[in-house]
Image (tube, rainbow, N blue to C red; front, top):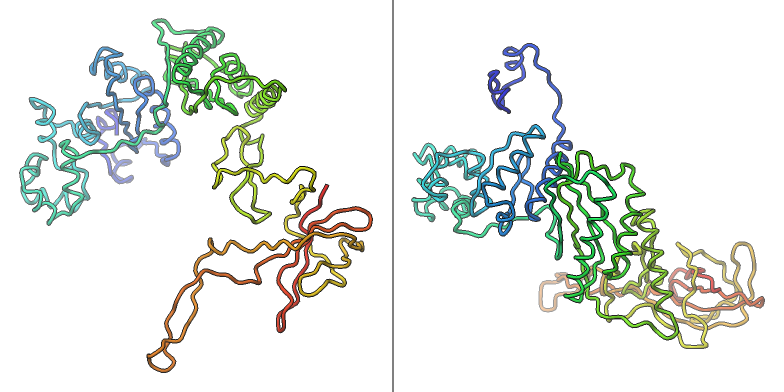
Length: 491
């Protein structure tokens, strides 16, 4: 509800029929919640020029923590005036207020209470609706004659809690600044950031990139002093019309190389469907480093392996920037002995999670054949086994894809059982000794069904082809025959 609508006699919550009766030419359309949220997020991006801690307060509010940022614009009044003017140029009417807590500032801005001699007095003069309790609690407070926050705060909190519950006490303490109030920013503040403000807007993209290179040099110096390197870099270009253009690039390893960073930034600009348009000019350019990692002095190896590794990583960075972060992927080990679950894919630029025990890929002994095949079938393919030794012997021959293979050599078995410690407990019924006849109790144990185990064999047929096969289950009386499967092929 803006001032124009209020001047025409409309009020929030007015039924559609009454609104049309007052304004026959009134145009109605459905509310677009997603568009409203997107617009609120765009306004939050605009506020990043004032502070890195900006939180959304849906459906139509923003909360800024300007601690340590006010002096950059000459104080609280100057910052608020500049922000209000920018919002006005976007057609927005804003009500703002300063307070020591988010709840206090929101209440002062929304309810515009009677001015007091100080902030605490102004908050105590606000109506009880500023506590933002449910409708029944607010109505009960008014019927009890408590119409302002101050009148409620003067009552014993124990009586308030007994009548309206603990949330009412928490709301009172937070709005008065007597209890901590957490503010969850939309984007976490980066560990390192540098910026450049301009008295006159920059109207050329080339000039903006030159300024970005200077900021990168400054950021690299700060990273070097802290013995850190950046893994993710984010450039923010603030236009005078309120639009914020964001460019983000990542590196495969910690880096503070300005040339590499600017090359990735230009690659990123080339992939944009909408080029970096300065519009009426950029009045602020900022470079953030949201992700940093330790980076000490490096020394090249005599064999040159580090140089080749760096070149490969540079190629990965360029391809990921040009094609998309999720397009270039790599494998990483997982802490499990199940063959088909021992690795997973992740973006090549992303650092893999630590593996339990600090171990990576298993390494075989020098000169020995590999323990695992490179190619695995998903799912394993069933084979027909002829003449397998009972109970734990390999097959003499097997048929796969209509071709019969005679086994000449084999290694095994290697038993791989299920991860019983990760399965939920299985209930079992045990007799209750000393109780009534037939009475049982329920105990729990971890599932350890031996039929879930696999016996793997590395076999070689007479033509020299090597296979990785397994038997699922065991030969036992009154049990179904175990199945044989081909899980992988050795090179």
